[in-house]
Image (cartoon, rainbow, N blue to C red; front, side):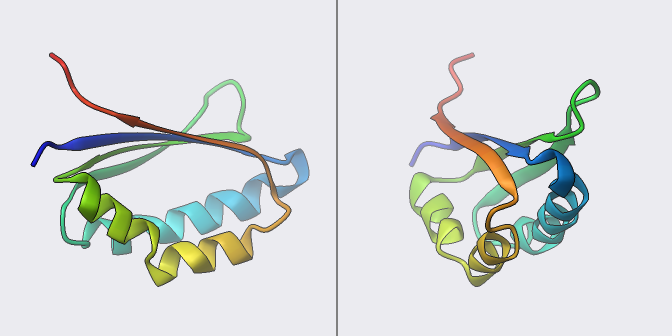
Length: 96
């Protein structure tokens, strides 16, 4: 099994930054305890506070996919419905 790196970019709507940030922060501790999670680090852009980025490493794609169907992810999606302007996710493999 090869490791999987995830880079997820979340852009909150300007009037929903605090809500999105709070909901993203709720994911950290529970996700770090999940099987296969190597790291799960949330960042906020210094120039654009509406831009959040998760840098994640997982032991395998299958374990990351299990994370993606976890109840806490569904709760996040429900809590932030209509508050996110843009979301992109990249599945990546380390090459060096």
